[in-house]
Length: 288
Image (cartoon, rainbow, N blue to C red):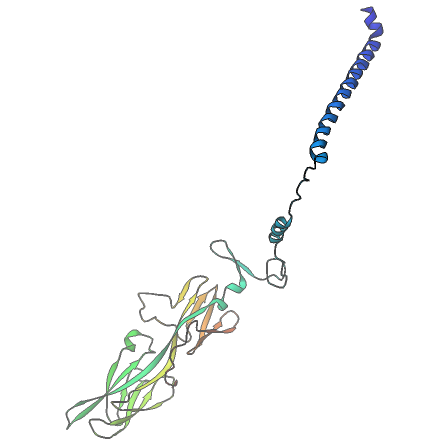
């Protein structure tokens, strides 16, 4: 034990040198084995005329990379970062551009010309003829008032068509021709409109477009105008001065023509003309 204590460093060094010598011998043998494997490979590929490895065709991968490239960003259009605009969130949490809401999205589905129609009805015997005028006011607000009504007429006798205001009336100013087929000249007065001179015969009734009604639709909120209401059956068409409430604002119908509807926003007094979505209705007689 005393010998090991005095010479342990020499012993450890001797062991390390022995391991290094052993490793050197093993490397010599390993080099020979590797040279032998390389020689076999050289004989197979080089000396025997072996074919080189085929180069890959990059065209397919280039096409994939080209298709994978994102489109160029157009900074001229409105979006969420550059050139910002108003964005809204619908009930489903979807973003909606401010250009896709409001009056520009309001649609005119249908426009109806509403006419005043007068027809002469002759009744009675050959000795005593009586004359009636069948009056149809399609533009009346209430459905009951739109139904045809008959009024008797006599020369220069005023027949009031409404009570108690007595603002709507007809007066026969002339009855000419044979009693069973006369020509009747009438004065017809509509409240707020000019007095009309109307000529009637049995074969030639009178009709004229007084105003137009419209049906509209706001697709963003799926609101139809007029809104169906079984308690108000007369509310079939929107008229002039009708309010339209949608997109958080109120628009008033300023004018309705045969081809478009003009609305004005209450918030800023801006007027917008909305064309009829489909074909315009057939033209009627001139507006009195």
